[in-house]
Length: 198
Image: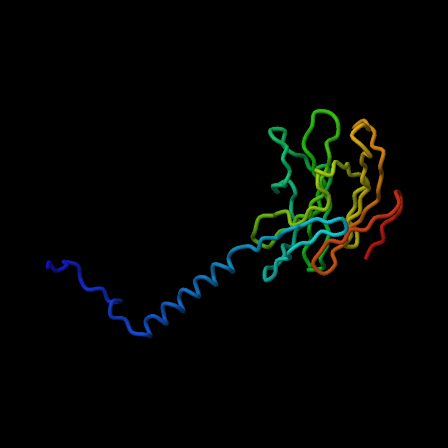
C-alpha cells in the first residue's frame, strides 16, 4: 500500500465543537443570504382586488421612482413601450412615495391598450413594478388618471365585442384602487363619478 504524499487534513479528527462551529457559521451565511435577497413582490389579479406581497425591513426611498427606468411586464416587441402618464403618492402610508404609471406599447398610429402599474423603490435599489392594476390584456384605454390622497383613480374605456371599431370604445367605467392591509382593493362607480379619497 502506498502512503499519500499529502499532509493529514485537520478536519479528519474533528471534535463535536468543530462541527457545531461549522454548522453555526453555515446557518449565519444562509441567513445573511436570505436577508440580502429582495423579497419577490407579487401581484395576482381578481375581479375585486390586487394582492401585493409587501417588502419589510427595508427603508423606502425618499424620492418617487422614475418610471422611465423601469422594466414593465409588457410585451411590445421591437416597438418598445411608452409611459403615457404617471403620478406619485404614498399609497401604503409607509412614508415613501410610490409611482403609478400608465404604460402602453409605442405605436405609430392608433391607441394600443394601456396598463396601470405601481412602481416602488427601496433605498439603494432599482425601481420595480409591484402591482398591476390594469393589465393591457384587458384591452382597455385609460383616461382621467389621478393619484390623490392614497388613491389611484382612472376612467377605463373598453369594447363590448370584437365587432366594435377600435377607434370608438363603447364601454366606459370609473375605477379606483386603494391599498388596504396587503392588497389594492378596486372599487367602481358610474362614469363621471368622483372617487372618494382617504
